[in-house]
Image 1 (tube, each protein chain N blue to C red):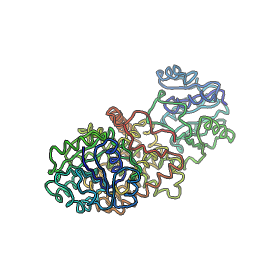
Image 2: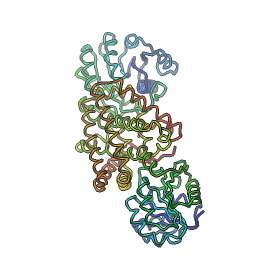
Image 3: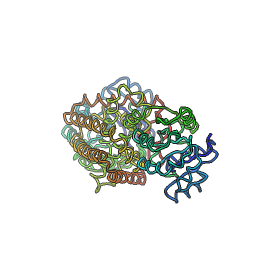
Image 4: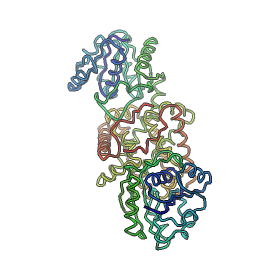
Length: 300
Length: 300
């Protein structure tokens, strides 16, 4: 499908993509570039890629698909390094969780001949690093493409086919809409999980072992989400700060309403809200986005 | 172990306990009482109990263990129905998630001869009703006993053995401490899950299908928790309103701090908090309260 693919950043997502490329024979050659030479050595050892080096320019050279899979805050630096090594007609993509700002940033900094098409595979686990990746990560998961003005139609189609070949279902949308929808379905849930675990820790430093002991009552499920990559999420919230801020305000307003209902013992209102939220679960299971099997009460 | 056990309320917990009693031969006879005759018929049909009727007095009559497994708001009514039918020396327990208020309520309303020992099995799934129950629900899960002043030492030991025989690990603590700890490990996580799903729904009524479509990015995991029994949780928050209120205030304060850090693009602060919350996950897995296997990114 491609002659040479270069993945910049072999973390959970990058290394999973490299594995999926190899497994599905999507490139004659696949290479990666990582700042750390320990990682470069590791990914060659694990046979995830054919070659890997911290010399990003060299790795990018001659590639017809380049994938940026580093934290959002590094994009500016990555682009400044590679912009003069990208060959004419190359497809440049990424795997970041926020789109509007970075699309503009990269658009301004690359030549006209580059097809810059941002991707967001909605996939991941709470683990990080090249050893946590696996080739099936993208199977049956959505990947959203948000093409820039510099994207060529035929390249959008080609990139779509690429993601489909690693198992994804592909949607195309505007960056602005992407950032708004994802703030609701992904960014705010992660922020709230971090906040609830942080709140429990602050209050309970002296009673931490008791908290851990009884965590199966609900907190456990938040700690899973709050174990996600700190650097990645730091960048996501900052990059999507307008949507995040607005959603936090809405969240706090609703939480204060709930608090008032509890203090007034307004059982009718609480029951009404809790019944409504129960219904959405059914929709999610029906849409194939989760399994019906109860998991919350799973045995440790 | 007991001659006759009566379970009042065969929902998820009550019916699971009845199944576990049968499976482990812990009573010569097990009966239940439910307000709905559809449920009474169902639990006999399913052979979960030997007899069942809406006549609670009659079902309780002659029992040496009585378990209240109805929502907390019904306790006053249940006690007024059964207090004159409880035989001398009976062990009276429950399975409710909040303790301090209801212990006092029941203590005031029953004769001296009754051993009133509140129980809280920390177990459950997001499903409800007698058909959702299963006999292994309590295996390897904590059950906290908070004995009242009317509890006899030998009965506390007997009830502890009973819970151990259905698979639980038992702890004994003061009701006040129980309500505080559980507000952190269970009640607030549930309230927050309800609030985040409710917030998403309010904002997005017109875009509900898009939200459902991309819910695997994080929201999905909250909808699981927010699908729990609305009546049960309504009562929990009202019964534990003092602890819940205080924790909400703390949660909002911390969330406002996070919002400020995001708006100021204070990456250092965000990273510091997210790294701290990641660590607690390791402790929970080490304590056997969850499995290490990544689940958040599970395939639908």
